[in-house]
Length: 263
Image (cartoon, rainbow, N blue to C red):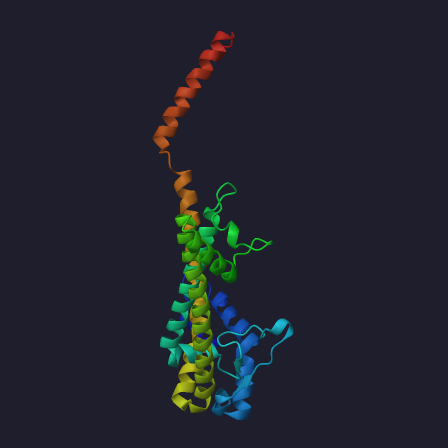
């Protein structure tokens, strides 16, 4: 692969073929070398293996790409998700977007309140946190009093946002649980063609593709910057510069003449 990369980029003026080759060597040292050792020892079936992760301190899993509770021996769970469970991934992303939108509306309502007129003041704890219990209690009181319609409408909306947040979080927890089980069950079902596609195309070659595009972006930014420098440098045409120089020279000579110096 190394020789083919060098020959593929040989003769190109913008690319340094050894920069591209360095990306391969870096990835080889970090990932591909270990993958090759596993394949040489256990064959392609090693790609079907996965392990359950134990939670570390503070009840969190270690940082892995994809499903937090599973780690593939050769194939990251994110690649399994992208290939086999894209619809479930999209559904989870949509729920996450709804959670963010819901939270933004709650923050917006809170930010709109002022010290002089805080319609949430009666549903906040001593620490300033709005709670569902306080809202429900306040709604009952306002309905009995038949007063403060603005406050009633606002805290009713806020209550609906709290309830929606609870439902969304439950939905995303359930969706993640289903996805985690599906991903776990998918590993042993991988065919040799699946493994070739996931490991070679979607893992190894995808990294090199990203590295290549990163190199292209770096060169593009460098060229753009250089073009900007040239544009600034040659913004004023040479004849115009000469005319300005002649004009300035005449002014200087006039001032010198007034001072008694004649050139």
